[in-house]
Structure formats: structure tokens, C-alpha cells
Length: 110
Image (cartoon, rainbow, N blue to C red; front, side):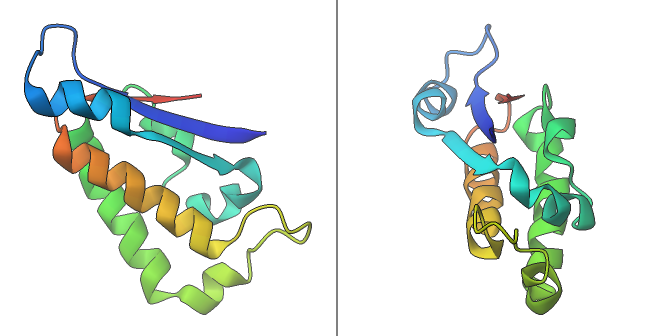
């Protein structure tokens, strides 16, 4: 199982950034990395329905925390080998980049 995250422009928004971003963000990460996201203060499901602009501070804080304590987060690598610190961090960066590009977009987490 994995998290699937996408961003969609608000229905009343036809700006280029939202229209482009709808197609560009299709990020996924295994549930096995959940402990990392929780430790970073960002349970992924909590972003469901958030606007990109509202999610950015939490994403930036989580990315900063994970970057500052790489050894601590690497200890949370799943023992079964499905997912790792680097993939989890890249997942958050992909979401952050999409939120920066489409701040009025709405995140969908499945």
C-alpha cells in the first residue's frame, strides 16, 4: 500500500499554474515510511483537502527536520526494505514543489 498525492486547481481557477500542476504532481510513497512523516510532524493524510499555500509551512518544516536529523530518520527505514529516508524526503519535496507552483491548488491524498 502507498500514499498517492495529487494536486488539483480549484474548480473556479483556470490559471496556467493550476492547470499545468494538475497533470504534473502524481507523487507516491509507501505507508512503510509513515513513522518518518509522523516524527517530522506531518502525517500525510492530514494534508488531504489543504490548499497548497496552507500546506507549504508544514511541508517546509518537515523537510527541514528530516534534513537536519538524517541519522535519526534513517533509523526509521522500514526493515522490509520497502521505502527509505531518501524516497520519503523526495516525496515531500515533490509535494512542496507542486504546492509552490499551484498555491491555490487542493491536495488530494489517497
